[in-house]
Image (cartoon, rainbow, N blue to C red; front, side):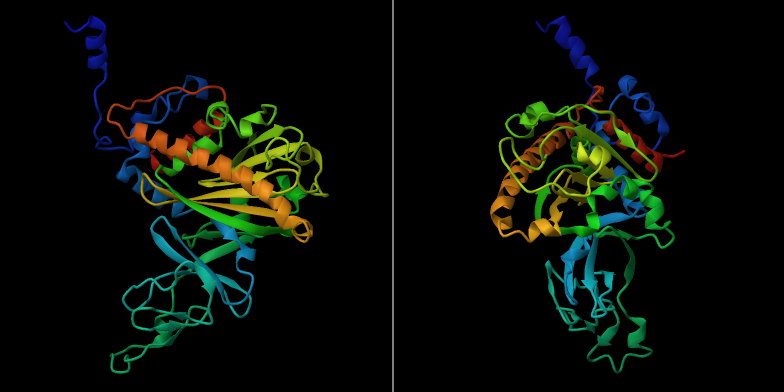
Length: 395
């Protein structure tokens, strides 16, 4: 005979096979909107629903300044790299005039993708019908179009997107009316000025495809509750203080930990000299900064690294991790030898986060997944969720 307890539990667990008919009704989030230690977590369908993800794409990624890399990734005229940002193929190119431009990576003839990966080119040539564009995006060659009525090459240049830079970082927005990047960043440049980011050099970029919602990965990066379990044999061994979250003006938030020794090395490893311009808190610890919606910067005594997430639907991201060191460090004769210690640390801890993010996504995809509660180590998970809801939920 079935026990009374199991029967009661069965009655409480009503499966939810899909998002509600109106996932943007504020009533769904009343529990989440309470103060963090009184709040419920977000409904699981916020991490799986195509409709909810579509609103995030249009109201968040379609309007903000999205981080896409560093200017030194395009070291020479003709250098390019490509990316897909929320389903939009993009080519970023340094022109012969030295200017960096971002184009829709789509031929104006019949839409074929123009460039793949990264490399160097004197012109942009469509692999389908050989329409050819110069590095400013102007159409220069379109064979067999002489008889097409009213066709003019000047009318069929590549569509371009707004780019802006800060301290060597590249940002792109799809919104032609977006406020300047300076407004978006607020006082973050002042907070991070001691790191002399303009003098940093990108030395490695590594990529992964991770089967999780973009919010899951960001939430994981911005809380320390998981560290003793997920990183038990890696960064959990680093001693650190727990400090309150860091906030300022602009679209960012962060964590700060006071400690000794570089956070980019495993315990017991020695590395490079510290950045000489550090002062105040930057000389005493490490900042972990989230630039909304999905870019994390980690800045420690001797280097910085970043994580950037490109959503590929509600349950998949493309993750890129970049590493930067001061140019004087990169010029050292022992750089290639010593930097392997940093790579070893990142190549152990980042995959640990990748695996646990996929584990969480799998669990949240169950129709029996329900809301939970927050610990006092997860305030920025709550902050991120409110930032998202402020932009996607009906007022």
